Image (cartoon, rainbow, N blue to C red; front, side, top):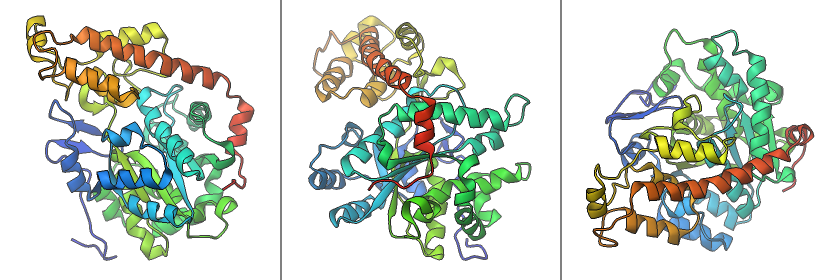
Length: 411
């Protein structure tokens, strides 16, 4: 059904097909976690085909990222249009973000930044990173300790982790909504005027008891999708297309954004969606920074990583050693294997794990045990986290200020 603006009212916020996926809630009834095929159909995005991946490799001359090859980034909106622009040597830019809710990022938080870093390197394009300190205050500022100053400070701290991922300072602008809003506000207001309360309620599940800041926030997250939000970078040019790498739970924001773009005379942003990084305790929900048992932080020590993986990582192995050796593990629910798909760059090692730990003829009767799979994951995670910690230790407050300075980028 359409509303008075002629726009379709859709319900993306309620639980359907045994799962709920919104920017704030991700939960599935099935042990295997989210059914991504159903999610593509519900959200109306496109499956990321092998043809698109191969075209990307041909145009860039670079092998596709492991997360593309393994189907971790699995869905998109208009990624082919981005490749058309790149082939025609026309401009586009990247946009991602972070909601600063804790001092330390966890491994799941690194996923969009690691992939965005790869995109920036491969395509040699500018990037804007939105720190939604305002959003965290609107959603969590219901206690005395959760002040607006706290979330602003957390945003600055989280910037250090983002910078540690290795972004090019000459092509990267990181901004706090609380600081930058004056520059972006004309864009925000134009978007707000195009979205009715009925639409926002259907997309985001807002209720009458939610504060009015929540109702207006989607326009703030939408604004960086348009180059006019960054006059110091793009001037008044509306031509550069925006590509947004994000987890699929963020798509409702940008479905709304894409709906309003033509009515504003602007280009629809393109998106590429990732699957969720599962919690240590299983794939029914994504990893949360608020639950230490489900989370490995980028500040964890090698011993903490080892303890958490061994103690909490959900196993798809059989109940008895004998049955596991005979039949192998259920890799669809095994967290050690699922995490290796994210963080093991070596395809040969991952294939060996699949063959020797999962079902099948390889090592039949003497399949790898869960402890061995967890040990392999620990050996993979420890150097990645140690490397990130070393890089972050070199990020100074002055570097944060430089990345967040309102300035022209080189591209």
